[in-house]
Amino acid sequence: MFLARSLFKMSSHNPLLRLEQRASEADQIIEYLKQQVQLLKEKAIVQASVREEKKLMVENAKLKNDIEELKKQLLEKEKKRGVRAVAVPSTDNSVECISKPTPPAPSASPAAAVQSSPPKDESKKKKPEKKAPSQEDSKVDVSRLDMRVGRIITAEKHPDADSLYVEQVDVGEASPRTVVSGLVKHIPLDQMQNRMAILMCNLKPAKMRGVVSQAMVMCASSPDQVEILDPPSGAAPGDRVTFQGFPGEPDKELNPKKKVWEQVQPDLRTDGQCVATYKGAAFEVAGKGVCKAQTMSNSGIK
Image (cartoon, rainbow, N blue to C red; front, side, top):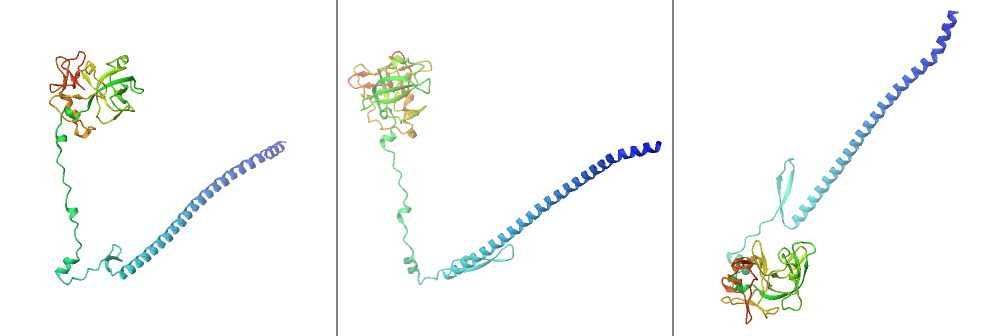
């Protein structure tokens, strides 16, 4: 009875043992195949590198042959032109040929050499003469500023700058000029409309936050206060502002490099009677009177 039971148990366990053995064998086979695949990949990479190296060697050899052929052609052409070849040793112990011009045959006489030399361009020797500064350039005073009476037709806030006005100003020309002024903090907008003023009209036009300004409104100025200069009663747009003792015509346009305005501006001031002056000479419109600030005396002007 015991023997029968043992045989029954052995017969029931054998299929499980066989499955476990086959699973173990399958794992070993899979691992082996992985190793073989990796070896094949490495071999393929090595073979590709070898093929690429051989290809490059072939191309290099071809390039060397092409270079040698071109050298030969160059030497033959230079020989035909009478250029002598000179051998120069190189680092790889080969001989490289470079061209050297054949020296010219000596001339028959010094006189012939002089005759054969090309004439020298005398004009190249002469350096351009520097022009002496004209009297107008050397004179720097208020007469070089184009000061005119103007009428501010309209003024509005600059679209891109809170502190600037954009004005249309009549200065006696065919069309008004556009002027940009930093007066928002000092002059109310309603006081900028239809207002007489003094304009400097020959500054180089400058773009201020995208708007080109073609003149400058002249003002009495201090750190805390600004007042637009008023022309005399009866003055009209375009009337010239002159200065006694400083005759002359203004520049058509001030050259920023000459810094005329920067040199003149420190001497522009209002006097004790609020009259605008340059070195004591009043801003004057001929036959009509002087230009003044409303209340600001002994102040700078800009």
